[in-house]
Structures are given as structure tokens and as C-alpha cells.
Image (tube, one colour):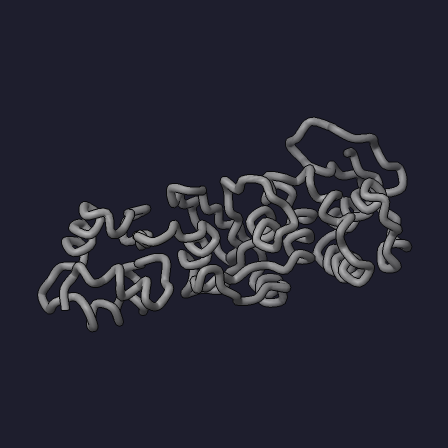
Length: 247
């Protein structure tokens, strides 16, 4: 077989990214790349032919000639060999909860990694403790056959409440919460409380903003310290004495 067949090998298996350090690449190299053919030379020729797009040393997006691969699939594929999940804006858009253009995709990891510009969007790795990552409410699914590990709606909201900087369209959180069922709200509240008091405070504030009743688990919360709803953003709403949140 020839180097030129590598993109088809990956697309047939619905793998969006070629990572020259991965076990998948080692398998592809054995099955496809002629013996003695340098991987870097092979990928350079494929990039020149428009079959792959280089995004970083040793990392390439496979170009699908039929349709553009979803950015969320590329983002998840970049970290396929380690625990991760896509959260906040991209996860909520995946679930149909928001419809704004997604220019940044937050991917949760347990170690620090640099942002990666994949052309369509910037993939922004964010970090949490390994035990929180293991307990996160996320699951494996597919989009156009490509594997994706994505947070549930509740987990995406909790991440945005605990780490407001992870979400670009944070002003839409109240609107998303307005569509939640009572059981979804209760699960979200329990997870927010487990994550941090600040996350629970922000949730209480947004529930009032969305016209939803306070959940049972939040009813007894008596915050001591005031927090900002979206740190780093200009104040847009009133201060809540009940939740001690600057809107």
C-alpha cells in the first residue's frame, strides 16, 4: 500500500486526526506506509496535496473530500488517547441548547496543554483534578460517525458555573436553565454544590433570573462571600443579596 492511502485509512475508521505519537498511527504505519518511508515526508506530501492539514508538529487533521468534519469531532480526537470530554459552549451546542457560532471549544483534561488552532476553531484545553474528571457526567457518542466524548447538558452547565472563563456565551445560561426539567435542575444543583459554593451561588442567581424555583438542595445554602456571575465581564445585572452574586 502507499502513503497516499493514509487519509482513506483514517476516514474509513472515522478518525479525524493523525497523531504521529499515537497507537493508531503506529497501526496505520504498519498497514499502509511502505517500509522505509519516513512519516514526516509522507505527511508533508499529503499536506501539499490537500489530503491532510497540519495543525502542529506531528498533528494533522484528515481532510474529508465529501463534507467538512465537525470541529467537535476534531477537538475530541486530539485527546483520544487520554481521559477528556468536551464541555460548555460546544457541548451545549451539540445538545441543541444554544445555536451561537462556536469559535472556541473547551476540552477538559487532568493536565495542562496549550490551545490548538485547528482552523475552524481554537481548541482550548482546560484542567480539573483527576478525580473530578473521572466522576464527570460525560459520555461517548458520535457525530457523522466520528467519535466524540461530550459532557451532558447538566455537566456543561456546572462547568460553566464553576469556571465561568471556560464559556464564551455565558450570558445564555439562564435561557438554557429555563428549558431544564425539575429533575435536571436538581441534578445540576447537586453537582454544582459538590463542585464549589461559588458554582451553587451562581446557579441560584440564574434560576431566579430564569424564573425557575430554587431546588431543594440549594434552599439551605447561605453564602458568606460574594462572587461575580462572570468574572472579567462588565456588570450586567443587579446584585443578589440572597445569593451574594454580582450579576
